[in-house]
Length: 399
Ligand SMILES: Cc1cc2nc3c(=O)[nH]c(=O)nc-3n(C[C@H](O)[C@H](O)[C@H](O)COP(=O)(O)OP(=O)(O)OC[C@H]3O[C@@H](n4cnc5c(N)ncnc54)[C@H](O)[C@@H]3O)c2cc1C
Image (tube, rainbow, N blue to C red; front, side, top):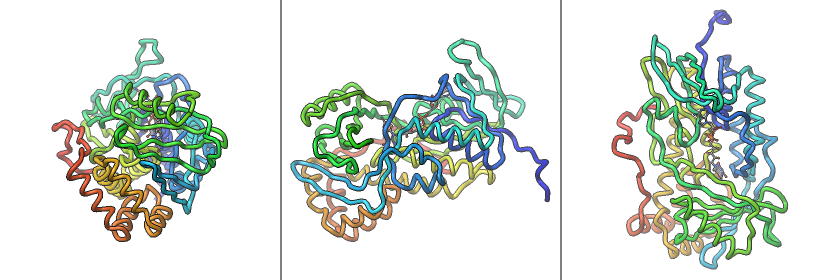
């Protein structure tokens, strides 16, 4: 049947960053009218170095190459005077966020999507079987209304769309990183990770984004305290901060449905707005893109997507890993680094963080004491808090 005359309802995407622009690109490529509303007056020019697995290349299908500024072939894990080295069979990628955003925007526009800047989403109303979005133009105080049947919130960790649609907001933690010159002798294809549980239940990292510079950072629980802890770490390691990057990032504490059906239409969430961040390593770029693929699949195919089920399984596995290690003491980490025998290292080298189930399963088979260390920590130490309020716990577990 010739369907060229069929017009599909247009879709509004609030937020023109990584997840929103990729969503717009996918929708436009599938022939849908995709309208992006970005609150800022122009692309976010703030530089931010991000590390992602090579899976980004598969997920983006060739997009994003212009944003790759370095490749990582090795991880060095430090704890309590010990060090373990892990060679990666396929390199991790260091990407520059603002280059990525520009490339995605160009691809979305080339596919037919429109991007409007200086359009800050204020509220959502339901009337006459449609959703009316009210947008403030710049900071003028003037507001415009626009009608849609489908609205996608890609407006980040503190999503106003999620709030307006009555969808749960993920809890957030502060992430701070400092730009530094690489220490003498450090190879630019190596990432260093330090486990110092008395400073953070997560870890410190030093990620080179060029042959001479990199970012040192950590995730904390309180913004001001996190920066102070980072400053003291930098001092201890004789690293001079040349600038700081930071923001609050959501942490995944359990799956919540990404779609809410309202009488005026459907509201979906993608990226940080949906809390699609791997909570073991706190990376949100690849999982944000996968959420976008799943949401677009659901929109095109009438409401559900196996891609969202797969993403949920992966995020749940990262949550399990985080629960196992969140209460780790220095002794647990020392034990863990000692346990990195040759067989286990091979598993870590071959499997990316985007396949946590594969890693977890093989680790347990090849070094069962890993599991024991994790379970002991879980039983004896501080557990990973479920930050959700009771009313936010999903009664409805559908996609
Ligand atoms: C310092 C730092 C380092 C990080 N490092 C890594 C890393 O190494 N690897 C990794 O995978 N992840 C990393 N992350 C996480 C990653 O950056 C995020 O998960 C990802 O950028 C989220 O993209 P997003 O498009 O969902 O949201 P955002 O990038 O937050 O974009 C939201 C967009 O919505 C717009 N917006 C907000 N409110 C409104 C409104 N009311 N109306 C209209 N527009 C609005 C904003 O202006 C913005 O453009 C890091 C995060 C930080 C802060």
